[in-house]
Amino acid sequence: MQFSSKEDIEAPIETVFAALSEFEAFERSAIRRGIEVQRANEAGVIGAGMAWEAAFDLRGKPRKLHLELCEFDAPNGMRFESESFGLAGTLTIDLVALSPKRTRMATVLNLAPKSLSSRLFLQSLKLAKANLTKRFKIKVADFAKSIETGKPRRI
Image 1 (cartoon, rainbow, N blue to C red):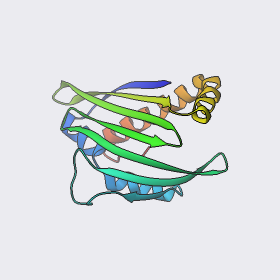
Image 2: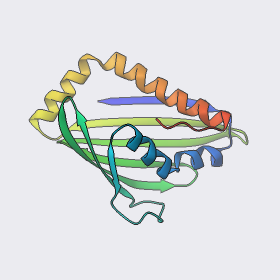
Image 3: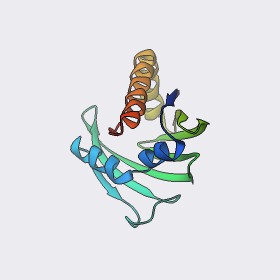
Image 4: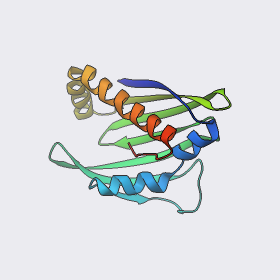
């Protein structure tokens, strides 16, 4: 299952990449939402190889998630890979400078099952794909707009 979105942002590519690279702010945002987040490597090193362990409740069951930053190509983009209860995910964020003060951000989230239960879970998500796609695009657009205003909000 794939979700994707493209947004044009009125900001230089370096500014957009810097907002996307504020991992500590994303960690704090997840913690405020009740997700237990722990960085799996040294907190000071930013780049490929960074990893996080997260624990949260989904549909009334405790879940664990392993998230790893696999590619970190400043200022062009990054790629994350995740593994959670038999579900593999890949999040790719690509940035393209359209002009010195305008950047296009392309975001693609792929989810793939690795077990029968995760296949059933994805099947249930497919029934609501239109609604989920709309919500995904709205969240990405809100984040892009917040970068333009200079006050990045966390997704």
